[in-house]
Structure formats: C-alpha cells, structure tokens
Length: 117
Length: 116
Image (cartoon, chains in turn yellow, green):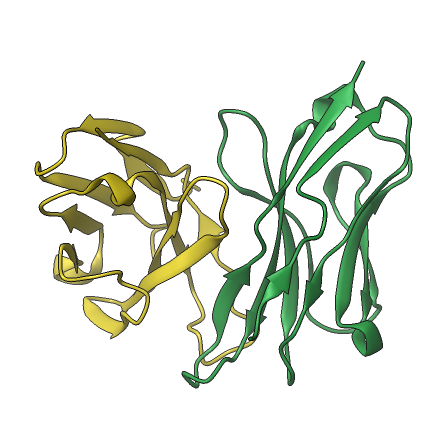
C-alpha cells in the first residue's frame, strides 16, 4: 500500500512569489492534515480536512495560506505571496479515524522543504 | 499553557550506550502518545504508540517507552544504541485542547547523534 506522498520535496522561491504544495493521502483516508515545522521549533498543526471539507483551520498562520482538497482526494496548500518566515518543512498526514477519536493514528508524508529567499 | 516538552534538544552518545529521551505533556483527560523518528533525508516514521493497556510499550528497532500517568510522561528508551539510530526523535500527544477535537501536539524534537 502506498503511503502519503508529497510534491515537491524541495522548493526554493523568492519573497513575493507563489508556491503550491501537493499532498496525496493514503487511499481511503478521508482525513487529511497539514502541519508545518519552522526550523528548530515543534511541528505545528495547520488544518484538517474531512473529505473535501475544512474541519479545522485554526492553525493557519494568515490569509496568505490557502488549502484546498477538491474531490476529497489530494490536497494543495498555496502560499501567496510567500514571506521569509514561511520557510520550513510542510508535512501532510492522513488518517482513517477523525479527531473526535482519541485512537486517531496519522500517517505522515516525507514533507516539503520550503525556502523563501 | 498546554504543551508537550522534550527536554533534551541534542544528545550525543557512543555506540552501545543506553538512551533515554524525556517527554512530558500537560493535557488532562484521555491522551494517546506517540514517538516518531526522522532519519536523515527520510520522512517521519512511527516508532511506537500508546493507546491503552500495558504502560510499557515496545516499538520497532528495540525502542520502548513507558507511560507514567501520574507524571504526565512518556519517555523513550533503548538499552544499547547503534550508529544507525542517529536521527531526530519527536514525541507527540493526541489530546483534546480547548477546540473540542483531538489534535496531535508535537514536542520540539531531540536530535540524537551516535558516535561509532
């Protein structure tokens, strides 16, 4: 069974440009999560989809970040315009059970390392 | 504030030394606990997890962790580390903060370097 995949693995852009990150969850997982790790800090929750609906976007830093999951399959996270502080590793995860269950086990992708110059 | 604390940010050990990485959390109620590892250039992998039952949990590659509810701790241990254990280790707690839904809360990670 394929795991969670993310594309690209690395992205280097200049301040003010736009970048779109993609995540493909494990097939059959309705729940999809985005996280971000800024260098040296903890991995922080950004948002959660159930199928195509945003269930919780309390972790999104500001309105320069837009996440979508059209059709309830893969998801994209767009940063527009990118700022220096957006640099970090963006992780995607998916799960079968949702966050109303304490038994929710999430499976993580390899991450996308974003560098904004 | 509710959080997950990993007290050791960098650990350097020689091969065959014993390892213990601390993890403390401050959430009440039902929690599930995880340790993840990220080897250089690879993605986050699950080492072990605790949901319920025996508080001493065995994971992959000889790792284990003990859940001590009274201390809000879930420390990771390995009796004898190998050079290949060089990686970054993350403690995570699936807990229910004020939002009313369970969330994964991560610690800041511990970088382990094992000297051959």
